[in-house]
Image 1 (tube, rainbow over the protein chains, first blue to last red):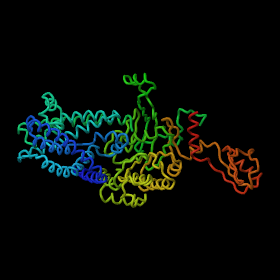
Image 2 (cartoon, rainbow over the protein chains, first blue to last red):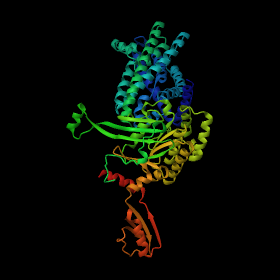
Image 3 (cartoon, helix red, strand yellow):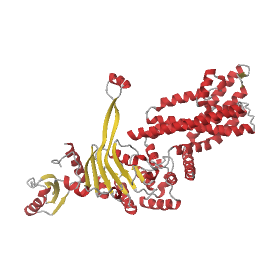
Image 4 (cartoon, rainbow over the protein chains, first blue to last red):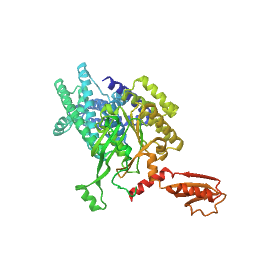
Length: 267
Length: 346
């Protein structure tokens, strides 16, 4: 455990140094992270204003709060392993990772944690600015905060494990971009990124709550906005833990099978 | 060699004794690796057919090879491109599962990739990089220090030694992407050796480097081996590397073992000719009666003569001609190795 802790600290330093080598692209990337929810926010605000100030149970101000909180939650749970993996396999980076006496997943966890530590403070400032501009409101109680923290951490764990598992597809195919596209399309709809889940047709809402996507973004967002009951929150956290357990099993199975394929073919 | 049974590798009798495995660092027995690849046929029809039913093709990369390495040995692993050298090194470093056969390195089965095993080995691939591209090598070194659990005191000592031996100096603090190929290779080697591996696999460590840098890396490998008693198995296309470092070589071709023994013996076995260089006044004499004249420049003749005749011809040359200077040489090692492969192909 002590060794892992040291390893994480060292990986933090490496990620920190790497990210600061690319300050400009970091800024451009963050602009993208802000723009996407901003577009949805503007679209839904316009729809809401044209609809007499609300759509479903969302007022114009509530839409602003929703998309601004969602931006931060999405940033917290986001990972880029799915984009990275094919490159790692093709360039032989994975071989070096396999030569080391430590599981490669750790460097990805640490890498993602550090990148969030760098980008989140900046995005939080932007979020506060946007909040003022769009008259967003947030009424948090201590209970909400207490429940939101595990909800958010579990959302990150779930999304990370899920995407790390899917990234392993690169062991079997060199065309992972098609799979990535499908995944991100589903995520966009079913996680609440494009619209709050309660505004989508009932069957989609059911599908979203059965599948893991909603629990990685939409759930913690609605939780912080106080839109979920205490019982609903506990149930949600339970579902998150359940999906994490499934994902851990999946990661192990897929990793073992993937390594077998990798070491049968080699790169 | 041409008259011998080509299905069997040439292994000198001194290497044929069954050494007890416990005294060996690397023990490989009947190791094979066959890749299964999808065959792509030409033409639209074949492409459409390929969507539904792919034709699989079995490509043997390594076939039943066996050899051993004793502690502290540096062995050259030779063969033309596609001979199976990298595949073998990858199996030995745990990156590939073999199709059949056994291998034990430091008492471990490599492809089980046990932590205790990985902690003691390294693989340097001349064409691949392990260092993080955008940041100074020193950051990657620090990461390796933690990964391999190197105590800080030891790390500083090792780093000092490596910096001195490889003349790393200011290279360590520059982003890796700003280093030249040779500078990067030195840093790669240092990163791979920080944990003082007992077994070092080197796959073309000097590829693409200039002669000075090749020499420096060669000297370093020799020094590392001497200082720490590490066992080294290396591939290289530069015969100068092999000549300088390896007393013994293992030669493979088309995945099969051709030769396992002392380099000198390989040269002796495959050298049927020697080169005699003599200095005369001018290039007017016809020396074809003595041997094949390869060239003549300013009275300096280069003759190719059968090895067994060398002494007799030398004697005749000295007696018949006003020789100012005479030199008898073995053909360049590249030529010999090339001969080994072409003879085997026939």
